Length: 102
Figure 1 (cartoon, rainbow, N blue to C red):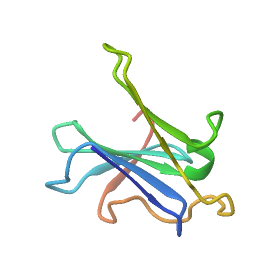
Figure 2 (cartoon, one colour; figure 1 turned 135 degrees about the vertical axis):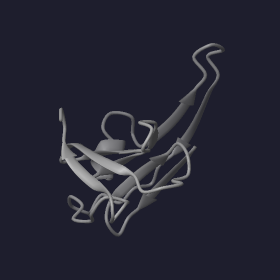
Figure 3 (tube, rainbow, N blue to C red; figure 1 turned 90 degrees about the vertical axis):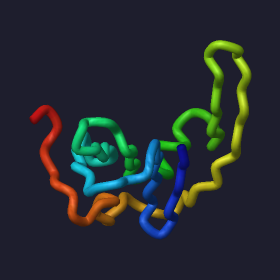
């Protein structure tokens, strides 16, 4: 798993696995797109307007928590606060779009 952030477009991406084929991108809201493999598994989650989404109530901390052991690792996220909402298209230029709930 990998988290990337592009400050030029204010887009964050949580990648669960590498894309082996074109993804189907489902836009759930103006700030959230899910990329799906043909078999329905999730390739990744795209966060548009990421600086607002990632710094809501936790001062920019990204925490990874093992629910079984309670072990917690925190990372500081230094995201640009000057960027507005992303105008960049989804991560897959060739991906299909369908509205949420279709």
